[in-house]
Image (tube, rainbow, N blue to C red):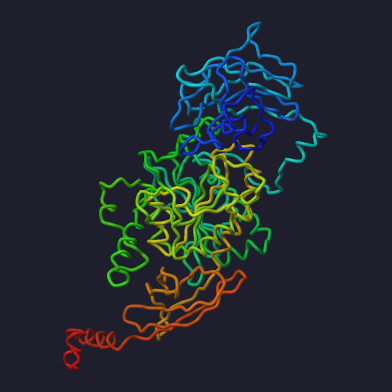
Length: 612
């Protein structure tokens, strides 16, 4: 019915008693999470004020509803062990007269939980039609208290005059496949999109999962299969945590939507497709997804399927390059001994014995192969956009603002998604779990939320040119199929707006005097201590906010070149090309090598010139 997804409002939840406000009826939602410490405001369940059989948790459906079952969990807490082991269910039409569900003449006693995290489903022998429903605990863990998290199963009875239902109903006009897709169904859907739009799509895989399932991606571009100089590369990934299913379905919906809109002549979508090479990877962790799908959306709990088949958290399985960079900065090695960008992967990480998931290795190879400019990975269980750094710089600190040199750009990118989402920045919306991110405009620096070494976002920023952010697209990691259309409406505009940000900043090509593109030239922005490099054809894209910037290009064997480039407020990167000439020393070396003579070394030349 929507306790987990927050479709049921706090005012629809009531209880006989509560231990304190943070354990009130409004916290009795399936999969709600507590903070690190038990909290006065945001705790992990409804807990009764007394332990006796007279306690109850009540849901007001606001209209006649056919109730069919109940799912229960214990209390989310690192410090307490509380759950209900059996309960009765009562229904009412007026909240005064209550009828207990029966098995013949006997009251039904439903078997509850044996521990606090795994959801337990009880279906009713016969559906009960009423407006109100109560769960009445009868027994509980003998070393704990009456505490519950609940989801109610049921369907509203038809009533076209019901104002409350009409006021809260979200509908979509998009003709898309709103369902959960198994691995086989996902492949089929991608094939259908490819057949509908063969001229702008291409299906490929970046590698295999631990169990051998291919990691399929779809490319959307006017010239699929090739990098076009001057055209930026964008990526969305989803499902690195296999139980966070909403992102996977959103990307499957997005590829359908873009294909349909392109065929119908939408100027916005056609411009995106013609000016951008877009890659959508809907399922990074198909093995974990299979585990969650097997038990279903309401019974997978908070963590079943999160990890890869071999128990690795893929999103935080990348090499910790932050520590390497920060140590070099402390020792003042930059730029003399080490650069401030494209930090190399340490040798130990690349060895076969390192604990690196097959899926992570595939992602790293993909990220190195394609010159991505901007990326977003879709996560679940919250409503917020996070941006690097994800690791705190101070040792032993779990939460600390840790900005990158491009903090202002990252904040804009995060806000571009959050501000166009239907709920993320809504100050009236209910908190998903413990953090009110709407106060922060729906965005947060990853390290100031919780520190995590080796994240995909930090790795992407430090090892490649790509700016990567995480979008937590819904409170419910695995929403019921009936919720997908509304979740699509919540995220559709955000998904498109964020893609369009790849065209913000400056772009150009670095040429030599003969008009050939120079690969691996360094693009430096004065005042920002993070450089990028040109791609194989000499083209580059540098994400920047509006303003004037002094740009310097450096390439081995070439003289440095600088110019001022201005970034406007309208979408569309400013063209900023460079033509650089060879240095005298590089010309001499080239001539000497051409005639099979030993190149003259610089120290020898200086000694001959008498300027040792």
